[in-house]
Length: 355
Image (cartoon, rainbow, N blue to C red; front, top):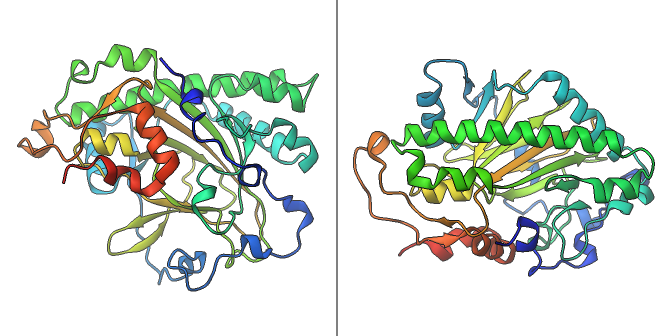
């Protein structure tokens, strides 16, 4: 069975789509990073909220109604926040601290951890960069398991703490992802046997992404992270509380900000859960915008099935829908879908849709 890293080797990127700009060296937004005003996805549209205080559901995982609330949030919005999630606040602070430790290094030091053209881990711009005409105001560090290989290049004698914190965080995020997925399956009226739960848990595809959005001279021109959906089942995002920048696209409302909530984590549905739910759960389109005054940091954890796992609609959706609908997608392996999306981005779902 191919690993998650190996699934990306067939879609190598050019170095221009890997190496971030040296954000410390620029005093104005360069043309390469300036998104046109006429573009419907222009970051300027975020300023047209008209006082709308639309909020994302917050769910206490210790609540007796947590399963129903989480399932309903997946169905209506594809995104929610969770509290009492079991991740110690001390660990969240440690992850932030180690992320700051890396991102505040000079550019020449950070590129020692540069992602290889055919690689999936290490330092670089977002993998969605080649699909857009302009570059994003973003830099990231991706890990799949231990970051030892890259961390040792950056800190030859001081890498252990960074690795320990990131490995601990991934272990706890995996357990939380399993807890959330089990709740969502229960909401759908499915048992663990319906999705081969033991194999999914033992060989899950997971990744940790540290995201940095440096201060921007003119955020009205720049885009932190362009609109996209996530590939896997679930994404769990930790936002630091210094500034908000995450936005989700809601039908009839446009771009809605997801404000950081103290002690909460953001959970959103990815493409594979959208497929498994037979389109009952929307795979939420989201983006990030930078700030003029604040260097923003987020930590995203992605959870999906093994690469040889076949993802397709599960028909026993009795509790939530009351009926069985015709399958809207054909079954596809995780590896094949990853490669489809790496080559086609927002067209990947339509490629497996049954017409």
